[in-house]
Amino acid sequence: MRPSRLLALLSVAGAVVAAVLGLLTFGSQASARPDAVPLAIAVPDALRPAAEKIAAHGGDAVSWRVDTPDGARKALADKEVYGVLELGGSGPTIVLSGAINPQGSQVAQQVLTGAAAAMGGQPRVETISPASTAGRTAPLAASALLWICGLVAGAGLVVLGKRFALRATAAHRLGLIAGVSVTGVAVVAGFFALWDSALPVDAPVLGYLLLIAVAFAAVQGALLCYLGIRAMAILGPLYLIAPAVAGQVPEMLNPVYRALLWSWTPFRFAAEGLRSLLQDTPNAPDVTLGLIVLGSIAVVGLVAVALPDRVKAVQPAK
Picture 1 (cartoon, rainbow, N blue to C red):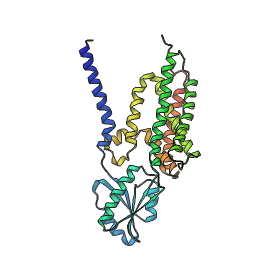
Picture 2 (picture 1 turned 45 degrees about the horizontal axis):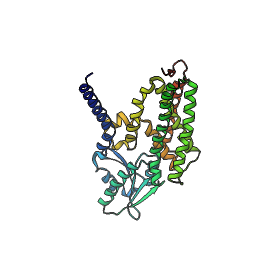
Picture 3 (picture 1 turned 45 degrees about the vertical axis):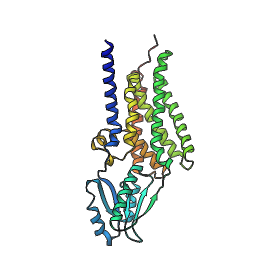
Picture 4 (picture 1 turned 90 degrees about the horizontal axis):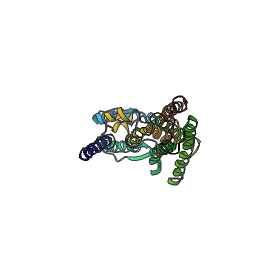
């Protein structure tokens, strides 16, 4: 092949990769806009007509829910809404939750502040299950770190196994999944203690972190088992794509990104379930959903890795 043709092909290849990654990462942020953000207005029965009048405004950007104070707070605890505007009493109160995705809380506070101002009131803000800066950052950071931990170990087994003529058996791969899961969780727990000593590192949190680590390492191990180092073309970009999408609430994403990326990325199940546990809301629905999804991923991945007649042995180096 002529050097000029090779340089042209490499230039096009670089542009294509940049276009794809830009579309799937920065594109999800650049195209973000509110769409049916779930919010609640909590009022006594006497003020319900006024609340319904507020709920009639906002267009497609907001999905209002008029409820009692107790019902609205329960909806917030269950993450059915991102914020509550309580009317009556001494004045309007905006109620937020530290267990909600920070972006969702930010959007909720902006909209609810505007709604309260339209009624001529200066709202006070109350936060239930308040989260520190570390508490807001830790869930997605932990998920990304556990993904990287498993990815480096799994790819290392493929590359070094070929270099040192190591035949990677199912036992080797399962042992690596167990080892990297334990060490990865230890690293993340250490970061939690370093970032904010108030973050809980108890049995539920450690157990959920271990489930995330096993699920990630198992699916990575399965793909590397069947595809070899070529699996990095899938697993590597996922690290860039998934956190950029999972860090946002679905109501802020373009519908295309919401359907094609957010709906299935394992990072969102990992991060949101962990966020609820760190903020002492273990009964939130996303914890149960995360246990089901991540548990299913772990089981499928482990079975795929353990099937001895389907495992690809690492070929000796020539």
